[in-house]
Length: 142
Picture 1: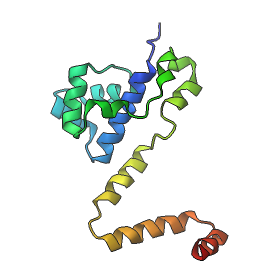
Picture 2: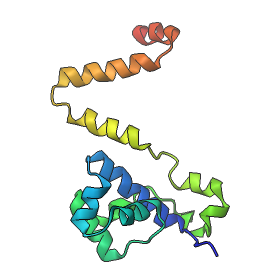
Picture 3: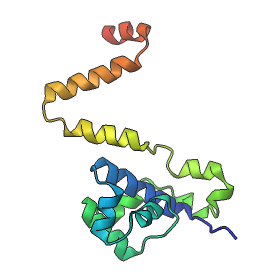
Picture 4: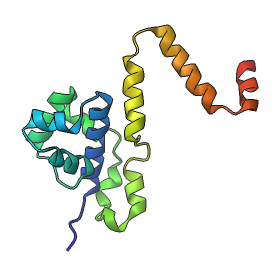
């Protein structure tokens, strides 16, 4: 029988993953700080294993947030979903704004740029790469 994955565990795990990556902490570094294997950290981040309250508190101390951080943005009705494996739509509802690991690393590295002029230049470059040719003219006119 397949183990039910509770959507709250998935949500909390995603928040952990986002915070860890945004700080530039690897799963292995996190595991070492907790005295665990990196596979256990992976299971926490996927919601496959639940974190006890003491473990969540310890993780919060490591990544510099209060325990409440891990629940911020969670919908109240998320607890009504019983089985994420059977309901892919529900899984999408858990964290519709979740960023990929690459996007989180990009945000981390962008935040590490100390020079405001360089940071603004990188931002302008990224915007320019994403705008269509006609959009560039409209952007300049605005």
